[in-house]
Image 1: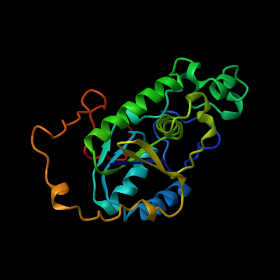
Image 2 (image 1 turned 45 degrees about the horizontal axis):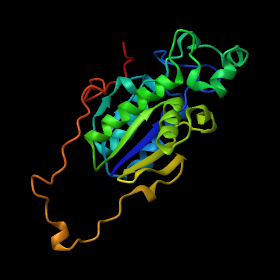
Image 3 (image 1 turned 60 degrees about the horizontal axis):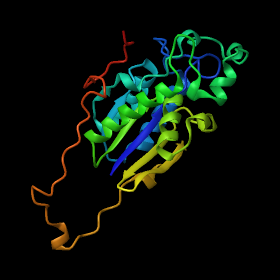
Image 4 (image 1 turned 90 degrees about the vertical axis):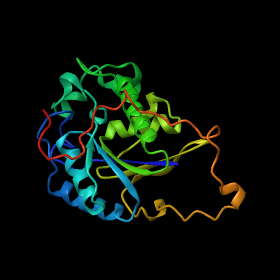
Amino acid sequence: MTTLLLIRHGANDMVHGRLAGRLPGVRLNEEGRRQAANLAARLADLPIEAIYSSPLDRTVETAEAIAAPHHLPIRLVEALQEVDYGEWQGAELKELYKHELWPGVQHYPSGTRFPNGETLGETQIRIVSALDALRARHPKGMIAVVSHADAIRLATAYYIGIHIDLFQRLEVATCSVTAIGFTRMGPRLLAYNDTGSLAHLKPKPEEAQPAAAASAPSPEQAPDAVSGNGVVAPAAETASPASPA
């Protein structure tokens, strides 16, 4: 099965006071760099085969820390971007709490549009489509995806069957890991908002199979490959910490 590690970026100076959105130049602060280093150590023993990231500075910096012990490139995926908050981007949260749209964002996100921005329903479709395309690229592997709190909450809600209008009940801490395994019986939540040991995610050795069961299927029985073309934006094989255009 594919195992998705959905990882929120580390702390930055705007986390608790302003809505950073897609503003360039929002980088990890000292706490965020410490979180990212600890996260890299927690993930070092896991068999991660690819690392994908939102192109924003804070996610790329977090992905770089994860990539170092695995010696993997970072692949940037535009569709893993933060929510398009439109005119709310960069605003102070204490002012947004007073906005007439705030109750809709909290209790009716499926039908509330940020001024000149996305609805959270549109964000959910964008994120899930991108993740499903990445799963198709890695049908049996473990991949790390570094993104943003709302994007991860929306994806998690979708995969575990929580209605989008209830997604605000989910919390996603900075540098936390939410792991979802995809089986033939559907998605399974393996870890949620985890900031501790992730040793339980390390795959166990497969049991030896009888010779007949282990034989390869004939060509006519082999499943077709799944293509992710047309869903995920072109990705850079390596990423620098420079701000995206």
